[in-house]
Image (tube, rainbow, N blue to C red):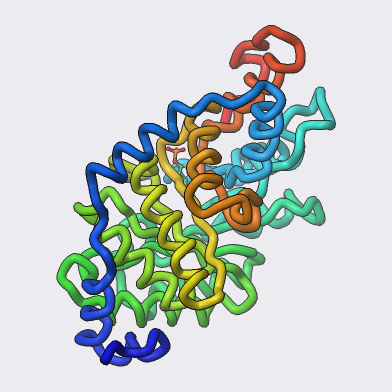
Length: 312
Ligand SMILES: O=C[C@H](O)COP(=O)(O)O
C-alpha cells in the first residue's frame, strides 16, 4: 500500500521511499525539450509584453560582502522606477538582500509595493545549526522582510537524510510567520535531474511557497532544463495536493533572450497560470538593464546603450 502524501514525512524511510518512487527524469529528453523551447520565436507584440512581464517578475538582487546601505538604497530606487525617464516601465517584484540590509530596503521602498526578500539560513552554504538559521530568519522577518529565500542543507540531502532537510524547511517556514518562503535547492550541487525533482517535492511537502534553483554563487545555476524539471514538479504537486507553489530560477540570467526563454518554458510546462509575479520570479543582479535596453529598442528602434541606465 502506498503511504498517503500527508504521512510521507513521518520517518526518513517513508520519505525516502516516496522521493525515490517519483518517476525518474529522462535527462536527454529534458535537455532536448528545454533546448527546443528555447528556439521558439515570438511575435514583436508578444515580445514587448514579455519584456514588461519579465521586468515585473525580477527579484533585483545584490548579495555581496561589500554591499552598503547606499548601494541598497540606489537599488531600491531602481526597483521602483527602473527607468526614471519613462514612467510606463513597471516596477520589479522585489529586491533581494542579506538580512542586515533588510531594514534599509524596507525604509527605501516604503509603500511602493515592491517586496523585500532576504537570504536567511546561513546563505549561501547553509552550513550552520538550525538554531542559528531560525534566528537569522526571525531577524530578517522582524526587520520587515516579506519573503525569505532559504538554502537547503545539501550535505544532508546528498547523504540521504531527507527528514533532516524536511524538518529544517518546516522550522524555517514556521519562523517566517506571514513572510513567504522560497526554498533554494542549489541545483548545481545536486548532481542529477532526479535529485532536482526529489528536492523540489521535498521542499514543497515541507511547506515552501516557492522553489528556487540557485544561490547565484554556484555554477551551473538557473539552466533551462533544471527550471523545466522544477516547473514539472510544481505542476504535478498542484495536481496531487491542490496547493500551488511558485518557481524562481536565479543565477546567470543576464539577457532578455534568457528571460523570454524562461517565460516560454513556464507557459509550455506549468502553464499560463504561472505567468505572474505571484508564481514566477527571475532572481538576477544584472538582467534588468538588458530588459530596459530591449524595451527601449522596441519603442524607438535603437539601443540607448548600457550607460544610459544606472549600473546594477
Ligand atoms: O538570487 C539571485 C542571484 O544571486 C543573482 O545571480 P546573478 O548575479 O548571476 O544574476
